[in-house]
Image (tube, rainbow, N blue to C red):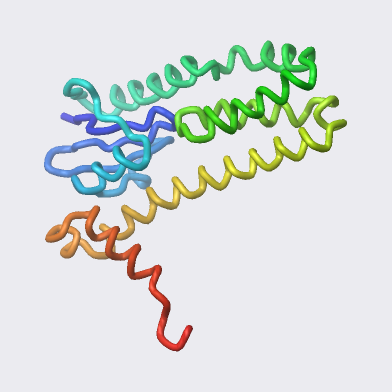
Length: 203
């Protein structure tokens, strides 16, 4: 029996309890991609990485129904944000007809509302790529530059989130005894503080 502990609906990353073990899983959900984590990691994922705990306990008889549920949650989250793949062509046709002030408004919305929300990153990336393909955006250096800068910031944010997820699990795997004694969250804070200290002789 598998239990869903926490889920990032933005991208399908999840923490799953398999017996006594907590596992971090992500698309395409292969066994090679599973990483052991602990309760401290779950706290970090929920407080800092936009994971959400289910409102009620969720158990699954095996990996197949669990993966189907995870895929369904991701698609539902994207649909709620207007990111359904079925609407992509229609959205681009509407953008082609929009005047520059409206397009500037889309960029501002992406910066203020979508960039801070990992669940909205897929839609923000699609919007920005669609904007950059428009001739009226290419003809406006100011708007084209703003869209490019925002796309770069989005890629940086995605990279930082992926590195945070990866590093948290690597620390637990490298120092299992310390993680077991301290907890993963405390270990990650200590290693992060240690890495920020200047090295001896500036080396």
